[in-house]
Image (cartoon, rainbow, N blue to C red):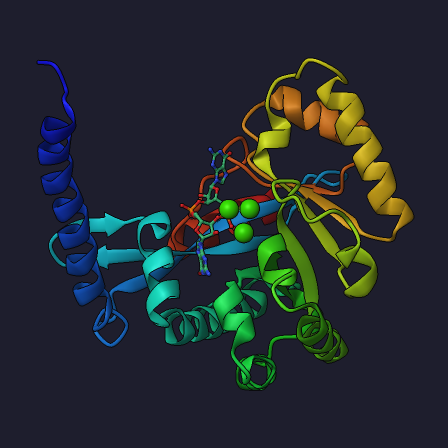
Amino acid sequence: AKAGGRNRCRFFEPEMAFATRERMALETSLRPALARGEFTLHYQPRIDLRSMAIVGMEALIRWNHPERGMVWPAQFIPIAEETGLIAPIGRWVLHEACMQTRRLMTEFGREICVSVNVSARQLAHGSFVDEVRQTLDESGMPPHCLELELTESALIADIERTALMLRELHQLGVKLAVDDFGTGYSGLTYLRRFPIDVLKLDRSFMLQDGAGISTFDFVKAFVDMAHALKLAVVAEGVETADVVAFLRAAACDEAQGYHFARPLTLAALRERLAADASS
Ligand code: C2E
Ligand code: CA
Ligand code: CA
Ligand code: CA
């Protein structure tokens, strides 16, 4: 049928209404989810590219919805951010990740680092530094074993305030990482303003060659620059042995991705750490 203006409108409206209803339904069930214990953390191992051992992992939230089953963070984190629910959810993630990791460290008798995603809205919250300090106290987590992952957009929101907060966090001894590095358009100046320790190279970098410089040359130049600035580089979304080989050749520090492990339940992570220790 010919899509005239009016027809298009008529098809468009119900779709919009559906999306809005969907979103509202999710929002309604998101509110009590924390109190009902519907969230869990999965952990994706991070591998040191020299020793090839697991040095830490990234905590990734999962929502076990009572009717829908598992809901991915891409579906509910934006809603949590818009509604402000990200504050209590983020606090829970930080606490849970530190408690569970601290326990793993005792079990395995070695240091294990955990990375936690922090959204812009959480960072903007006045009490964030206190929350981190308190969580470190309660969990007994060594500060240098906790890394906070911030996106470029979170960093450039309010440069003066952010710089102050990041300095406070850094003084606590926690590590600061820029997540999805290379996907934003903010340039590199914030690297001079903020005490960043780690750059997480977005997985789009791992994809095939573009028209100009080869992926290898690009990543190599990037790693060299980061190292000159005393930053460690973690490659994300590593899916193949070929990519592992070129990352090692480029002297990239660490990697995570499906090639090594998908995000794992705590039980599966434990097995993986045990297997790693005995090999
Ligand atoms: P992210 O921080 O960039 O996390 C990496 C995402 O890539 C994860 O998706 C992970 O499962 C996926 N991934 C890992 N390795 C591979 C790979 O080799 N190939 C491909 N194709 N994907 C891979 P996930 O768990 O669905 O999380 C999506 C996003 O949701 C995260 O992106 C992060 O921005 C956000 N998120 C997750 N957990 C939290 C949280 O606790 N707090 C906040 N604020 N955001 C979170
Ligand atoms: Ca992340
Ligand atoms: Ca990322
Ligand atoms: Ca991301």
